[in-house]
Length: 457
Image (cartoon, rainbow, N blue to C red; front, side, top):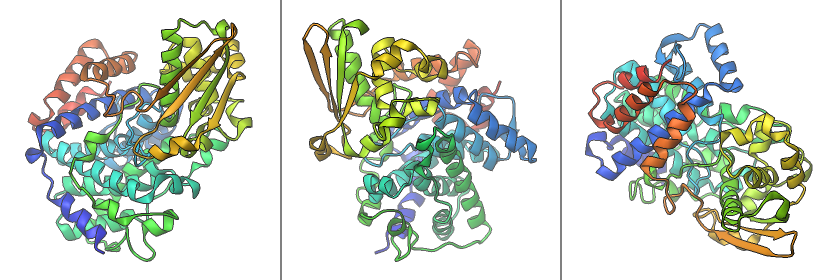
C-alpha cells in the first residue's frame, strides 16, 4: 500500500480557487465558528498561561493572537490560539473520527498564512486539506479503539492535518509534503489522563498539534526527512496508536464529499458525547413544561465509546470540582440543562457548578451504557432520554442526530449569533460586524492579515 503517498498526492492537488462553492461556503462557516470560540477562549486561564509562557520565552513575531493585542512567532501564535479555541468545548467536531479539526487547522493556517501573506483563497484551500487529512486519519484509527489505548484523537491526528495544511501554504512540492507528514508522525501526541482530575492538557493538545504542524512543514522545507509510509508502515502511526485500524479509510472517498461538509458544530459547551442527551433533556423539559421540582429522575442511554468519558468512573462524574470536570460529566450536563434551560458557556463555569439545585438534580441522573446504540457508531452519535416525574408520569425521546450535525445543522444565522454571543465581552460591535463580513468574503481577500487585524483588541 502507498497510503501516505496517496493522501499527500491528493492534498497537493487541492486548490482553494477550484473548490466547489458549497465547500468554500462551509469552510467560511467553520472559520467564523472557530474565531468565535478562539477569541472568547483567549479569556480563559489556560490560554492566558500559554500566552504568558510564549511571551516570557521570546516568542514575539508577526502573527496575531486573536482576542488580544499580542503578536507571536507563527508556531507560538498557533499554540496559543489553538489552546484558546479548545478551552471552551464549543469547537467543531467530526463524529466519525471523534476529533476537533477547527481548533488545530485554523490556528496553523491563519498564523502561518499571516506570515507568508497568503490570500483568502489560499487559506481556504489549506484549511480544506488540513480537515481532509486529519479527519481521514482519525477514521482509519477507529476512534473507540484509539480511546481504549488512552489517546486523544485531536492531539494525535491533528499534527498530520496541520502539517499538510502548512505545507500547502508554503507551496512545498510533493516530496517535501511527504516529509512533512512523516515528521508529523513523531509529533503526534495527546493522552486522556486529563479526565482524572480536570486538568487543562486536553486544551493544550489542539494548540500543540497546530504548532507541530508548522514545525513539520518548516523542517521539510529545509530538507529534513520523515518516513514515507508514516501512516501504514510496519511501525507506523496506525499500528502504534490503535488495536483495530483500517488504513484504506485514509484514502477512501477523498473529497467525495470533502470532510468540511461532514463537520458538526457544537451548541452546548461540553463534550460532544453529551450533546445528544442534552438536546433530549431540553426537548422534554420544554415540550412538557417541566419544573425542576417535577423531575423525579433522568435516565440517559449512552454509546459505549462515550460512556467511559462522560459517565464513568461514577465518583468523578458525580463530584465535579472544575470546569473540565463539568464539561465531561453527563450527570452535570443533564442537570444544568434542566435547571438553566440551556448548556452554553456560562452553565459550565465554576460558579454554576456550586448551585445547590444543580447538585441535587445530578443525584437523580442515571447514565446507562446501551450497546444497542453502538450499531450506529461512529457515523451517528445517538442517545435516548427518559424523565420520570414526581406525579408518576414519564417522558421519553430519542436523538439520532444532535443539533449541529450536518443532518441537523445550525444555519448561518445561528453561527453568526453564536459568534456574537461569544465575542461580545471582548470586541466592540462594529468590529464584530467587520469580522463577519470579512469571513463572508474570505475568498476575495488578498491577504489574511486583514482578518487577523480585525480579531485583535
